[in-house]
Amino acid sequence: SKDFDPDTMLDKVGLANQTTMYKKETRAIGQMMQKAMMKKFGPVDAKDHYWEFDTICDATQERQDAIHELVEKSDDLGLDFILVVGGWDSSNTAHLLEIPQKAGVRSFHINKSDCIGADNTITHRTMAGEIVTEKFIEDWGKDVVMGVTSGASTPDKAVQDSLSSIFLLKKVHAGED
Image 1: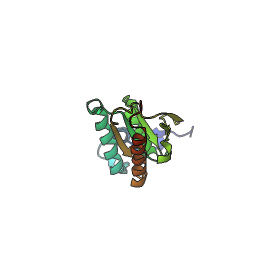
Image 2 (image 1 turned 90 degrees about the horizontal axis):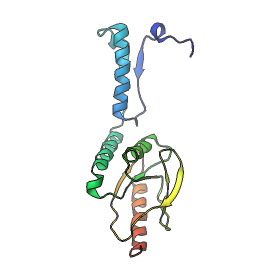
Image 3 (image 1 turned 30 degrees about the vertical axis):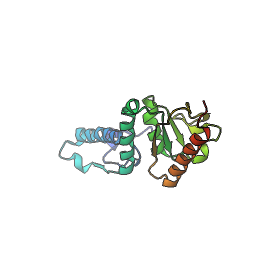
C-alpha cells in the first residue's frame, strides 16, 4: 500500500515461492531479502526476522536441468525440435518451453496429443501465450530427432499418446517430401 514504509513497518519476512519457480531465481530473491534483514537487524538477529522455506519441487528442477543439458547438446544431437507436453496454464510447463526457445531451439508446447494433426500441423502455445498452428515435420526423408519433456504433473499417458501421434504421422508420410 502507498503508506507502507518497510524501514519502520517491516519486522519479519517469510519466503515461500511457487514450487515451479527456478531455484536460481528463488535463491536470488531469498538472498536479497536476507541481506535486507541483516542490514536492518544485524547478522545475529536477522535469523529472528527472516525465514525461508524450501518449496521448490525436485521433479520440476530435474526437468529444467535436463532441458538445459539437452539444449546445450542440441547441435551435436542434430535435434529437430523439443516437444513439451503439459497443461497450457502450467507455470512449470511454460518454464520448460522457455528454456529451449530462449536458446533458439525449435520447440513446441502442446497440452494433448490431438494438437498433432494428420495434415502435418501442430497446434501449440508460444512463450507469448499465443496458440498457433504451423507445419510440423520439416523433412520426411530423414529420421526425426526430438527431445521430449513434460510438466511435473502431466500424466505419462499424455506423453505416450503424443509420441504415438508423431510416430504414426511419420509412418503415414514416409517417402514424401
